[in-house]
Length: 266
Image (cartoon, rainbow, N blue to C red; front, side, top):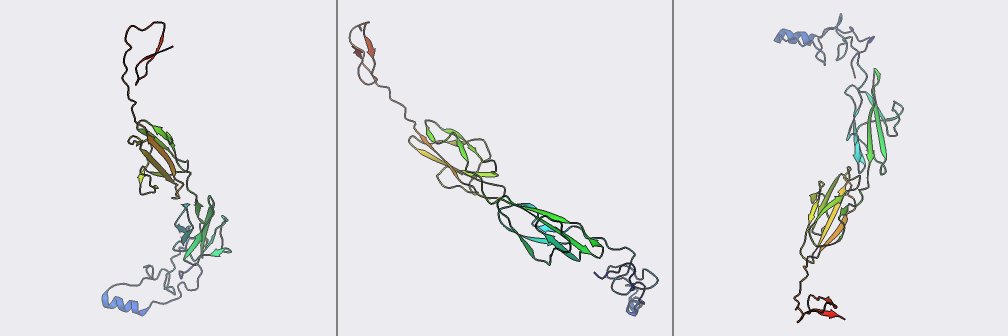
C-alpha cells in the first residue's frame, strides 16, 4: 500500500511533471491525476509517489471471508481465506481463539480443516493494515461422518392376505430416504420417500422385499432397512354334504363335515 498517511514528508514535496503538461498542450486533455484518478495537486504542490494525499486516512480492514463457509460436512475441507482489499497481512487460528499478529499468517492457498464425527472446528481470521487491526471473521465447520440408523416399517415383515399400505419410519437424523420394492439395495437414485404410505401388493404365495435407506444432512448414507411381505390369498373351498336320510334323532348331536356326509356323534 503506497498511499500517503498524515505527516508523510512526501506530501507537497514534488513538482508538476512536464509530460502531463505536454500531453495537455498537445491534446487538450488534463491527465493531472494520480493512480486513483484523484486530481493533482490536492495541496500546495504535487505529492511524491503514485498517490495524492487527500486528508482521508485508510480504514481498518473488514472481516476476511471463507470458501467454503460455515456448514456441516462429511469430510475434511480445503478452505480459502479472502482478506479485505485494503488488508496488508492476515492471521488465523483454528482453536476458537481470537487471532492477532502473533498467530499463523495466511499467505494464500487453502487451509485444511478436519475433525472427528460431531466435532466443530472454529476458524477465525483477522487482517491488519496501517490503521491497525481489522474485524475478525469466523466460520464454523461441523463434521458428521456417520449415517442414520436403518429405517423400520409399519406394518413389519409378515404374511398378509391383502395389499398393505406401509409407513417407512425414518431415524431422527435422516434428511432424505429412498426405497426399492424389487429386492435391490436402494441409493439416492431410487424412489424418494416423502412420507405417507407405500403400497405393497403381490400375487398369492409371492414375497415382496421392501428396502429403504436414509441420508443425513451431510449426505452420509446410513444402513438399509428391509421388510418381507408374503401374500397368502387362497380362499378355502366349501365342500358339499349330503343330508342324512330320514328324520334326525333330536337326541343326537350332529357334526357337519364340509367334505363328507353328515354323521351323528354317538
